[in-house]
Length: 73
Image 1 (cartoon, rainbow, N blue to C red):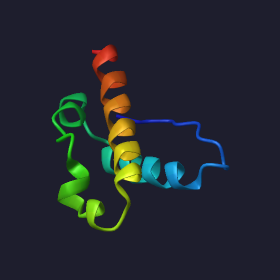
Image 2: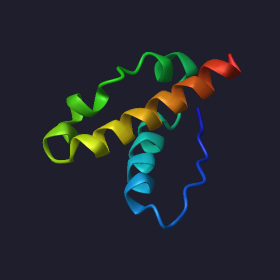
Image 3: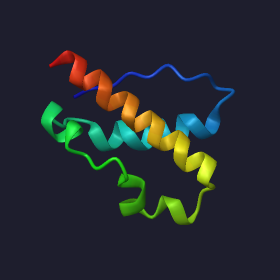
Image 4: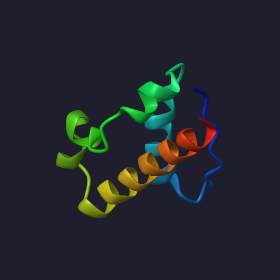
């Protein structure tokens, strides 16, 4: 998979989260993307260093990306 996200420079936090996900999914198959746990941020330990609101934003971005992959299948 190759993702291209257009996130405004005015949203550096969201851009950072998107970069993490895009880098993690680079070269992944659609099945691998779809099988990624929705709470992958827990596995990465991000929930310990970012606020719950930011965790929800990261989660929402992951869910959005997975929905886009599901639509393409």
